[in-house]
Image (tube, rainbow, N blue to C red; front, side, top):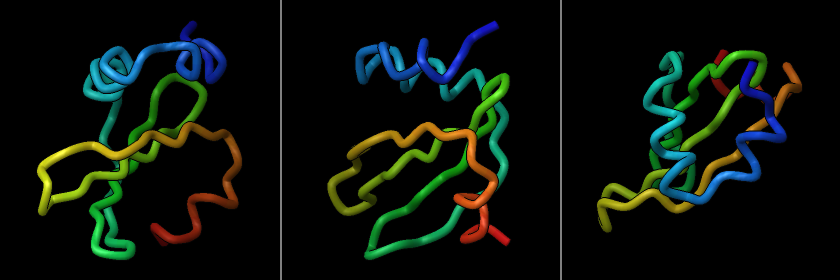
Length: 72
């Protein structure tokens, strides 16, 4: 099983590839960015994307259900 710790140890490119193999759940906007939520095995990953620059800025992986509140 792929874990949160495994994910955090990946390079940015490897994280992007792993996320695309996950399940897309939802998206939202925050401070002009698109934030997409994915489910991978036993954790979630947020992808922070800047549409103006057409680039991924960062990934945030977590297990806490509290961080899902912005998507409800």
